[in-house]
View 1 (cartoon, rainbow, N blue to C red):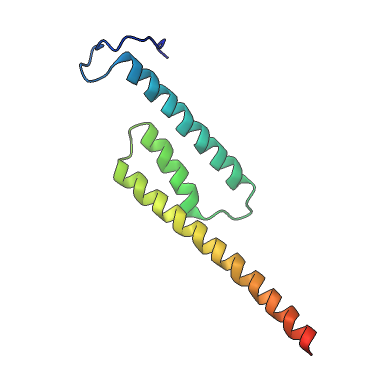
View 2 (view 1 turned 90 degrees about the vertical axis):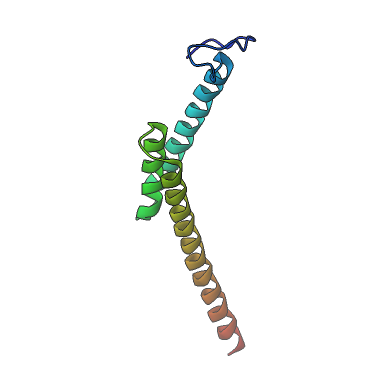
Amino acid sequence: MKKQTESTEPTTDPGVTEQSDTLFGWYSVLHEFTSLCAEQALARVANPDPRSVEAIACKRRWLAAAATDAELATACAAAYAAARAAQNTELESRLTSLLKLKLEDES
């Protein structure tokens, strides 16, 4: 990683400064960290949804410039849909249990 300086003089690429290079390096580290956290969270789930697993794999490919922004957006949308579906299933299960308890109390 390059040492951050106050100078914004162009490096080899006129559009990239040493400061923006350093910022991109930190963004990359943060993206890698969040991927690791997500993997560890999914490791605690008995049967993780494949869409969530694929979103993390796509994020890693994106970091390696092997996936496009559109591919990453598609994978993230699919993972979000998986999370919402799981949340709705859990909510439905809890509401059904509460309804059964209420009906038992009324009998």
